[in-house]
Every structure is written in structure tokens, then in C-alpha cells.
Image (cartoon, rainbow over all chains, first blue to last red; front, side, top):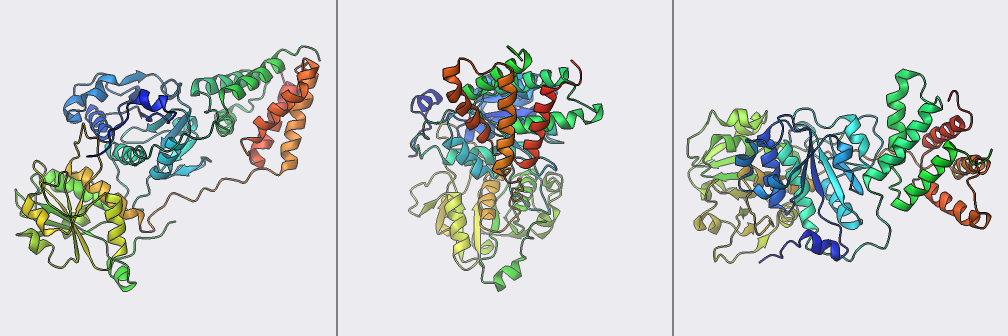
Length: 253
Length: 253
């Protein structure tokens, strides 16, 4: 009947981008985690990460709601922060409705799926808590926003529905097995980008850059989104770390 | 903000195919009828028809599950047979997993959505009971089968999920609330980028970064291409100039 979904290692060996990681940020109900797992597995996604789930993990409510998608729940890993959950990912997408003041590219699930298939490196897709969605600081970690185009007079997508639409769009691209993207280096893993951001932040704090105090969070966000934008590869991030180290401790002046 | 969903009569007057009717055939749980209504309204579908719902109609379980999509439930009409429920429709699609020896064209939700938009006349889309799906006799009423391409090793779509995927694909064909046009600022004029590169270059030269001398041209090229990559806008370039000025003359250290 239909083509089998290639396993992750096979895909990597073929130079195809691996399936994205689904990151549930501060999910509230175990039942919804289970439903999200079910939604994922329907379309061939298996890697789930949880950032500080409200009721801890494992959660006895998750299994029954997963309707057999136990493999996803059993493999789910828990992290303390979005940064840690995405540390090994080259691309981070944040699903959210329109956020004011965030200047990042906004894509439909369809466009995001094409991006995930077309670029080298692993992607993570962030989904916020059921009630409130992602916070601005969560979105700041991402380079791209994913928004489902929805009835402007009735937008009421629940967590599992948002996950299923994104997973469904991703699954459309796997049969294609298009030739691997050109030999562009993938963006550096998120952890390396965080290292760069942290390094600059320390330097700026020491230099008295952050002033006045009430503007500091906004300034930090501005810098973060500006440094997230380029998708620098690992070599480029290393070069910039060298730049910062030199500015920190000049060899001569 | 975005375009409103045209009313059905307006669409018909414009010669555009009207939105499809969602027909739930012998649905079992009122809760699932409510969830299907919610799924529909998210993507602008409002007309629901019910063929002999197991627990009668109206069903008190439906409302809470609809999360506000009451307009769909209030307008739902009940019929005794699939034939009666689709009597005024020009095209009937049956969603089902297996074909069961039925020789009819099989489409993905995407292809079906294109068909619905592309052909004149109203379409109906049939969804079967939660547990068993459509019977052969139900499918026989349809001209076309719709099958969601799913993980062959784990196919577990519930009723509302099947409805949402079909409604979502249909919604792509109308001018729904597409994600906001990306109001990203254009890249800064080249002269401002050059100012930034020159500023960093001066700082690095003073700090003894450029060493050994024979590597200097290559290092400069690396830095230039790395700073050109992001296409920072004017505001971002100004922010970075501020960063460099602070590192050059710290306010305190």
C-alpha cells in the first residue's frame, strides 16, 4: 500500500533532515500529553520532549489518552527549560497565534514542513501550555513562528489538534525524499548559540551596557532575536566566540 | 484585520462552490459530535448533518465539547439515511481507511479539497461511526473516497481529527486568516552594514585579534560573510553599534 516511513537513522544516512522533535512546553494535563503522542504517531513522529510538565512525569493520565501510542510516551524526555530541550536542534519553530512585537518570520504549517524537509539539521517544534500558549521568552528561543490560519471569529485549536496539523503537514513531505539540500552547513546546535548569547550577555553586563534596569529584559530579547536570526553554523559561532574572547581580553591595545 | 469568510449565499452568487456539508453517519457519543463541530468551525465550516445519531438529538454532551461552536450544533439537521442527508449535494465524498473492494477514486484530503473548490455544486463529506467507520453501503453513496495518508503501523485517527484535517485542507482554498503578512523590516542599507563591519574591524585590530598577519584577509572575509548573512535591519544594526561602542568604552568594569 503506502510507502513505509523511513527510520530516523536511515534518513540521516541518506542526508535527509531527520523528523522534527515535538516539544510540549509546560503542558498541564497528562491526558493532553497522551493525545499529542497519539497525534504524532499517526503521522510518523516519535520523539517527544516535555519542558517542566505541570503534574510531573510519568503521568498516569497520559497512557490511556494515547490510545496505543505508548512508544512515544515511553521515549519522552523531560527538561528544565526550552533551551535545554532544544540544545541539539538546528532549527526551532514556535507555534503560536499572532504575538505583538515579535519580529520573526511567520509560516503556515505547510511552509514550516517544507522548511523542515528542505534544510539540513534537526528541527524542534514548540507547543505551549493548553491555557495560555507559549510565553514571549519561549518564542524568543525560536527563529520561526508557525501559525495555523484559522477562522478569525472562532479560533479554538487544542494542543493535540495543533500537533496533528503540524505532524500531518510534515508527513506529506516524507514520501518525496527529495535530494538533500545543497551542502550548506546546518545552523549550529541551539546549545552553541546559547553559549554565544550567554558570552555576549556576560561581557555586556560587565561593561555596564544594561541600563536602565527596567529596560533590561526587553534589551536582552532584542539581542537574542537579532542573534537568532542569522542561523549561523557551528564554525561561524566559534568565530564569534573568538571575537568575544578577544574583546574580553585584548592581546594589546 | 483579515478577510471575513464569505457567507454561503454570497459565495454561491459569485459562482464559487459553497462550503461542504459535514455528514456524521450514526455518530455514537455526543461528545464527539461536539468536538467535530469545534473542528469544523475552526476552519470556517458551519453546516453539519447527522444520520441517525445513536443517542438521539439534541444531545446534552455535545455542547460542552464544542467549546463555543454552538452555531454549528444549533444548525445541525438530522436525517434517517445517508441518501436523504446528501440529497441536495452534487458531490459526495466518503472518508474511510480501507477501500473494502470498492472501486472508486481515492483522494487525499488535499486532493478532495481541490475538487470541492474546483467543481460547481455543493459537496457532502461523510464520516462514519467512531468505532467501525462507514459501512460499504454508506460508501456506495459516494462518488469519491477520501483517505488520510497515515502511519501504516499506527493508524488511530478519531472522528474529530479526521474532520479537522479535511476542514483544514478545505480552508486553504479560501482566503481565510492567512498568517499576517510578514512585516519584517528590510535589511539596512549597505552603508550602515559597512559601518558596523568597519567598527568591529577597528575594535578587533586594536585588540590584537588579527594574527598571524597572513591570515588577516581570510579572517576579514569570514567575518564579513558572517555579518552579511543575517540581513539585519537598520534598527538591529544600530543596536549592534551600541553593543560595540559599549565594549569599546565600558561604563564600568
